[in-house]
Amino acid sequence: MNKLNQKSTLAEIYANPAGKDILHKICLQLNLPEKMIFEKSPAKKLTLDGLNKLTGGKFSEGFFEALLSILNTDAQDTKREAVLPKKEIPWWKTAVFYQIYPRSFCDADGDGIGDLKGIINKLDYLKDLGVDALWLSPVYDSPNDDNGYDIRDYKAVMQEFGTMEDMDELIRQLHERGMRLIMDLVINHTSDEHEWFQKALADENSPYRDYYFFQKSSEVPNNWSSFFEGSAWRYFEEQDIWGLHLFSKKQMDLNWDNPALRNDVIGMIRWWLEKGVDGFRMDVINYISKREGLPMGDETIGAMMEYTGIEHYFYGPHLHEYLHQVRTQAFEPFGAFSVGETPGIGMEMAKKLTGQGRRELDMLFNFDHLETPGHVRFDDYRYDLNYLKSYMTDWMEHYGPDCQMALFWDNHDNPRMISKIEPDPKWRVVLAKLLAMIQLTLKGTPFLFQGQEIGMINQNFTSPSQLRDIESWNLYEKLCRTMPAAEAFAKVAAGSRDHARTPMQWDNTAFGGFTQGKNPWIEGDGDYVNCNVEEQISDPDSVLWFHRELLQLRRQYPLFGTGKIKITNKERKNLFTYYRYDGKDVFYVECNLGRKPLYVGKRPKNMVHIMGNYADGGGQTLKAYETNLYRVSKK
Ligand code: NOJ
Image (tube, rainbow, N blue to C red; front, top):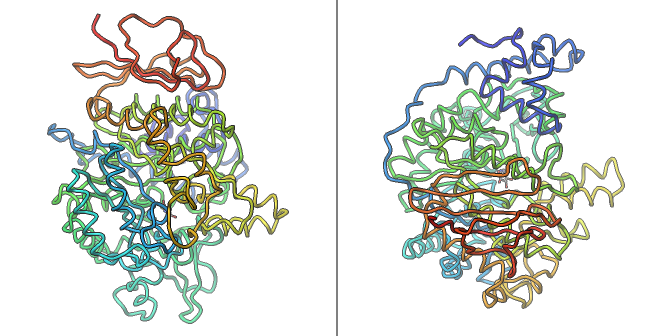
């Protein structure tokens, strides 16, 4: 294949798999009609040089260099593409995961902070719900600048959460119940209090110095921005040196180009696998390989993408190589499972990262469905489910038969999906069930986030003092410099990660039964009186039971995880319908994605209604957000 260069046209860039992903992402961000531009309009004939001229040199040369290098490197990387001989279906393809944010799940010792014993106390609940595996957000020793995503010691448990004995007990008890555990693996960065960093900072001749990115410079080394506001560089006055941190000032980026660092990380992963954990969710794992020399980021791209410098590390030059090493040296010997958190990675890149024969990741989280085109998390807007339909249709049809999607709506980094779609509480229950139906019947592996199974929604935060997240604080502080405090707060409250981090609502006693002791570290708005586990357990029409039934069905019919899918009515607004089938069974799912009644007419006689979100549903006209599942019997 000819190498792409400045004379290449946009159509040629779009024809390159990584190029397509990048242009797709830009179009999403700016809400531009991608196919129109790159396949039909005259703009497709523009060369990069031409684009540069047309935009008055808005893009830097460095950007084009980075872009071309990503595309050309990717196009050459075709090794390990062979598909492995088909073995039996791995467990995670038919599993349902449940993500726990340990700080907010259940507090057993009454200090107001969730803990491992609290999780152990709820294992029967989770087993009854029907989940197969848990993913725990980080429980390692940490000063908690970013709630555990800043690890001080990978081989110790955070004191507030308990002890290593508790951890062993959790693993034992999970396995006893036939369930599995994956941990959060935060290896793009460590806390500045990690021993490696401390040694590296203290002594410039320390072997750990090269475990991080340090630079001597009279000014900030480059213009990269931190995801938590400000520059990505922290100045250490005493040592007169700069250190790189893509996240908070206390989360220092690791230098993966150093083979000794990679070996240490691999050793640590193996240590946990020897303990019996079944795999890992790998935090921002696509950021681990940074472009050599850490070049300046393009300001135009930075403004478009909200963060400057991202083109130099979101799909870095050695990403595939490092993942392959970690996979073969740590994961494979234990048969361990991996799911990567990979912001910014599009479908073509995802195919490479999760392609079976390439041996890098089992699955990954793509985030492009969490906001509709042209929107970012902190925008206050109503999410249109028709976008979810088009996104899912695309991935279901094009990701490829060997690739398995990780299906999720909520996690600890996002406001609750129900609230984004429909803040009117009137629709809360039907909508929660509709979302459950889609998530649990599409092809892929669902990841439920704690509270989703009862339909938890955003909190009604009324003051900045209620927020706990460093990202929210920093953003609020920044916005207050340019707008009235009330406006700044409204913006932060629209997208704060804290919506997902308030205590799990177990019952209608104080603090929703999350703790019997001190006030929780973060308080909810009292919604536990409307929505809690205890009440839903005794109500067969509850959101909780809807989840339970779907999970039971998945267990009975593995085709929901691995069978085929055929999406119908693709062009019809608000109607999302599809068949799920294997050689033996066929199911049909129908969803009204809006509030307006939707006429669908009579269904064939061989469709038997199994479940839905209205007691009198399944008629010829679908009600607001109505969903139904049918079994299609042979005629
Ligand atoms: C992604 C995690 O999900 C998020 O919570 C965290 O703040 C960043 N990575 C940094 O580790």
